Length: 436
Ligand code: GDP
Ligand code: GDP
Image: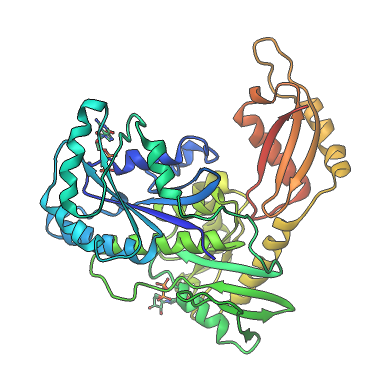
C-alpha cells in the first residue's frame, strides 16, 4: 500500500510554492542548506492530524516556452489525476476565474479522485467575498485560504487528509527487501530491472495481494527475498519534457515511500544533476536506505583511476549524503548488476541494526564528555545517556539536561561519531535530544 500523495496544480503565481512550503513547514531542516537541496523544493512530506502524506507542486515542472505551457498544465492535471490521491486545485482570488482555470476544471471534473478547490490570497475576512466567483468551476465549494499568512490553512488541511488512513510505519512482510529503482528518465532503470529479472540466477515469485495498478516484481536471490517496486515510464508518451519529469518525480516519490532501499540511478555520461540531488534528498527525508548506482559505465573511457576520480567528484557534490555508497554498473553488459542487490541487502540489514545501549554508551559517553555541546547563556549542557530507540529507520535518543539548546552542528558531530564506530552505511540516521 502506497502512502498518500497530494498534488498541487494551478497556474503560475497563484501561490502553489507558498502553499507547499506552508504545508511542509520548516520542521524538516535535516538537509544542509548549503547542499542546495532544500532550496527550490517541489515536494516534501507533511503530517496533519496524525496522518502522513507527501505533497508535490507541479509548479516546478512548468516549461519556459509560452506555446507549450498551457498544454503542459493540462497534461500535468491529467497526470495528477492518475497518480495522486488528492488534488489541490489552487486559484488566485485576486485575478478571478481565468480561461486556463476553466480548462483545468474541465479536466478535473472528469475524475472520481478527491479534488479540492482552494482559493488563495484571501488574506482577510473582507476578501472572502472573492471566493464565491469560483463556484462557476463546478468543483463544489471553494475553500478560501491564505497560503502566505496561513489563514484557514488548518481547516483546509483537515479536509485534505480527511479520508487518509493513519499511517502505520511498518508494512507487513518484513523479510522482503523492497527496492525502488529511481532516477531521471533514460538513465536505464527499466534496462536494469529487465537485466536483473532476465537472469536465471534469480527465481521470480508471485506476490500475494499485489495491488491493481502496480507491477512489482518479487524474486529470490542468495536466500533473500526481494521486491523491485515498479516505476514504469509514462504510458502515453508525452512530448513535453517537463511533463515527463513531473510524471517521473511523482512515480519516484510513490516508489520511495514504499521501499526499504532506494537505488538512485545516474547516467555515467551525465553525472549528478539537480534533480538527482532532489531524489536523494527525498529518500533521506523519508529515512530510506540509499544507494547510488552510476549506470552506463560501459560508455565511459576508463583508466585505472577513473572510478575513483568519478566517485571523488560525485562526493564533492553529495556533501551531507557522504554515507551513501556508490556503485558503477552497466545494465547493458550486466556488469555488477548483482552487486547492486548485494549492496541493497547490506544497507537493508544496516537499517535494521540495533546497537546495544551498553555498547553505545561505552563508545559515545567518553566522546560527549571530551567534546560536550557548547554552553548556552552560561548553562552547561550535559549529555547523560544515549539509547537507540528504534530500528528501520534507526533513531538515537540522547538524554540531556537542556535538550532544546543543543545546536544542529552538534547533532551532525554525533552522527559522524556514530557512523565512525557503528557503520550504518547508506542509512539516514535520526538523532533526538530528550530531557533527562
Ligand atoms: P506559484 O507560481 O503558484 O508557485 O506561486 P508562488 O508561491 O511563487 O506565489 C506567487 C506570488 O503570490 C508570490 O509573490 C507570493 O508571495 C504571492 N502569494 C502567495 N500566497 C499568497 C497569499 O496567500 N496572499 C497574498 N497576498 N499573496 C500570496
Ligand atoms: P529508463 O527511462 O530510466 O527506464 O531508461 P531505459 O532503461 O529505458 O534506458 C534508456 C536508454 O539507455 C535505452 O536506450 C537503453 O538501451 C540505454 N541503456 C540503459 N542502460 C544502459 C547501459 O548500461 N549502457 C548503455 N550503453 N546504454 C544503456
